[in-house]
Image 1 (cartoon, rainbow over the protein chains, first blue to last red):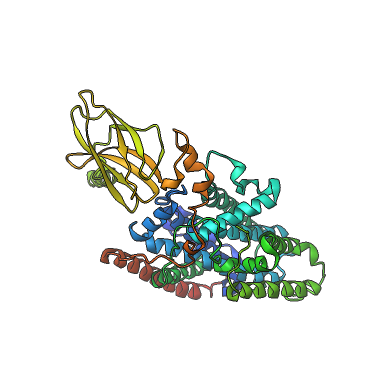
Image 2: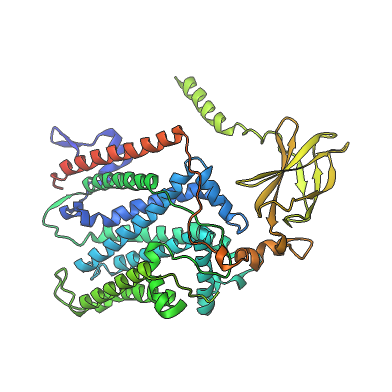
Length: 340
Length: 191
């Protein structure tokens, strides 16, 4: 990476000014495999979500009286607004896929074991925050689907007492729920996500990745490959945003449930079909509770990937149940859960 | 060379700081005792700090729609007071009332929420209508009005927009491929 001259290593001036030589620390060569880039790709999509979200926030009106019109304005009149909104939508879907694949691969590798428990919990926390960002983002559309998401927040808030008070209409008289959900989506949740990302990256830097370290390369090579993959991923979601622009439903009508949620939430919808509105609280609580407990539950001394014992069977069963619920949500009829 | 840099910097700063059309004369004030009004109802409006004797037209401007209101003339101290009727046909939503001078510049703006006729606020202030349950929970209607399909939206874009989007996607794809190839070559380097 640097030039040798007369026995001394010479770093190009442009690199020394930017401190790029600090990126030349050793990492396992395996880090350059696609399976180890899923977390980095998720970070790329999160960055895209931040940038496109900043743009959309310039035109969005979080007041119920103007929200739907402002989304229509973004689609029809804001410069490149339709594409940027669709890019936001597709980036959210892509982040859901990559973070799920990342979690599954890290689970299979059993990389949550000592000393990487906190790295795992930070990752699970980020996955939870992405899920919350997804559902709060859906509500901001303020079409029928968004309105029904808001109504679910209210219902969940009322069912969970003090824990869910934020999502009830009685929380304050001074601001509508939609405005508070907008604030949650654009400030509190992203701030928490950035904090957990910082913790996750710092722990990876300190503890290293869980991979065969007999062959090494330098981090800069990994960063270049990740940047390349990230740009290709951006091009892909950019093309999707052109080819399949995200739509918008009709202005909401209160008291009726006529839509299904966004595809990553359909497994929760399937569970609601079976258990009623409690399903939307129980489903995510069981999934993320299980993921949080994983480092405590895997006590086997054998460290080999895939050798989880009963925990692996349990995880597989949970995964199959979620897949089944998702298919039920996709293929099953639209149902009413709130009794509106 | 230094003066060229200074000149270019000044130009770069001057372009975004140039007042946009319609904002140049926005120095007067529009006030109302109400922040929301039902379609078909009347908004009491007061103007101040307008050009004395100046004539203005009022319009109701939303993100997607615009309605002409009434004309008004400021008095000798630049003030006026009037009741403006919001037509019953106005689509409910978030709007601004704009006072437009004869040269087309917007002299003042006022945010106003237009509610459906059935959701008129009970109090004089009107805030209850904006923050109340009805506006938070969407309009009332029948089951047949609740639709799960999407609106048909005119998504026409200018050639410049398509060009920029294409350029961005193409550049990302090209640079991304190049970096992946460079990274593959670099991966032969051991630490």
